[in-house]
Image (cartoon, rainbow over all chains, first blue to last red; front, side):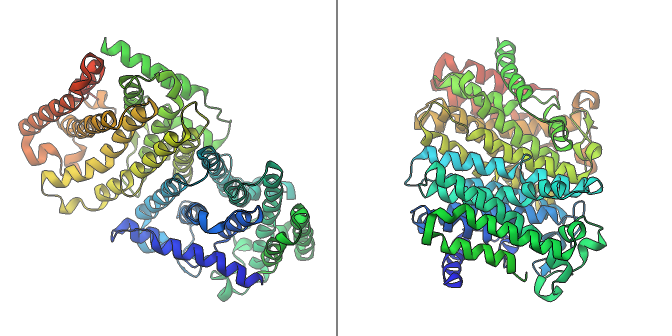
Length: 288
Length: 288
């Protein structure tokens, strides 16, 4: 059931991505290269699942969900740049800047971020105030108080990270903010109540945390071929990770607790929450 | 009269910029450094003048006008990066990346771009549909079909530029798109008719062109101290400019014609257009 539902959302997202009217230009090829990187599309999938959870129709908000994937993709392109994480590979293929050069990689990221807001502001058949709220929240989550702020901390403050609270702050910004925005986008566009929006927010914050813990664990135990990048790279960079601070067993315990907390947040939706509960398990058990 | 009016708009913009709630963090200091670079703020000023031109109240839309300055500032930070124009100075002081390093400069640009959309989507006392239209148009103008596209052409296609039409295409994207968006933002938020919006669009497109021609001319005849950057740099980079293609006299003629065309576009507004007419002259005669 989980896989079928995931693929239903995923297909909506992929179809929309394929329909984007990119020209045959250098910048568009670069944007497309990273957009078609074979990601899990967890942000738009989460958004569409939250639309459905609160009683909305996912097919009506695919464009808005895809905007989140554009923002995520831009952040990956910029994070991989030589002056940031200096990563040569991403999702098993060459990083954007390794194919198109630094200048185009920066500009493709800029263009994807900008395009996200173009997609978010197209006419919809819901109250425009609701749409403005989504734009406001997504911009806030992606900016210096959210995702960009997390990247700054991740790139520059590594030396001062000593406690679980420190890495949780980074990840709640770097990964959590946009995941939370995705869930809220879905719940707001889908017509959820404030209480429902609040619930999916807590769910998504936990999922974001779990995602990062699993990422850290996979860097230790994962298979490089399945990961699409070499494992052990955190250790090489001397990164403070969950396994580094808690040990592998401690990190696994923390992961389980976080998943339980995520499920609890949406428990009151009853059977309608089944997909999101399974999504939580998927995040905890994924191999890449 | 012109200077007084310009300073009125400028003060609104500067006051708002100063009131932005930046924290004492590395990323905010970097954003602030470039925002307080002492620019002419021509985009927000143009926007506020267009609000007034169509009968709206400029004080009501300062935040939205400032969003354009954030987008402009982000584009300057990214353009100056080593992998792009590799400029050490901007507006007479060190470029952002020379002070904060490449990584922070990239992230500060990202954060400014993102924050612009946060500012554009705050609640306003006008129909939300109108606000969504502004966001849509600004995003489109700033993206790969507009400003980013212009930067790509400017950075990579220099070799193939041989005609005035070629450079006009670049500049209509690189400078014109955001200026046009600024004028339209003002006219739309101010409650202008479609015809009025159309008129300021033509005006702004001409102003953008004139701005670039004057820029090219100043690079030949300007005073480095007043310019805040070394002159003659276009020639050093072998850039195809208006003076390069038309000669200095030809470029000056082209500039005068463009200014006339700009004034003609807004003629029908009568005396209300006085400020924008003087703004056109200012663009043609500025020394930096």
